[in-house]
Amino acid sequence: MFGVILGTGVGGGLVIDGRLVRGLGGVTGEWGHGPFIIPPPATPPGLDLSRVIPSFRCGCGQTGCLDTIAGARALERLHLWAGGSAATSREILTRWEGGEPEARRTMDIYLAYLGSALALVVNTTGATIIPVGGGLGGSAALIAAIDRGVRQKILVQCDAPLVVQAVLGKDAGLLGAACLECESERR
Image (cartoon, rainbow, N blue to C red):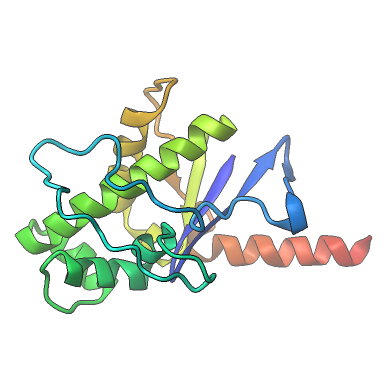
């Protein structure tokens, strides 16, 4: 399982055989802190990505991380860059679900990049389920769109949903972190 957080930022964690994988320095699953592919290798028909998205500076100190266009605040910045009016991430999602052209353009770009990055994670880790928590993870329409995009780009095709809403909701990552802290204190 590769758990994803789509909240203020983008994060995640890799679980194999029921155990969290801890990598170099205890960090694993930080898929939001790698450069996004410009432009993504596969884009929806009719989506023009000839205007390259700027490599925004990330809070981690790097430039061009996926986190700079895929978290909630970053989605708002992406929307402005794509020609949309100032709006919160929730407003953008609501407008997208309602078919507004500005929001649809933003979300097409968002989904193209996010889907490509998450497909790379799936192809690398072999994850068979990707629960999504965080504030953006509360949108069933967004999760379904991400799932479709990822399943179109992975090597092993599957019919069942791969990207799903986290059972514990938007705070799933926070609850998991709290459980890990309790576990480490018992040792």
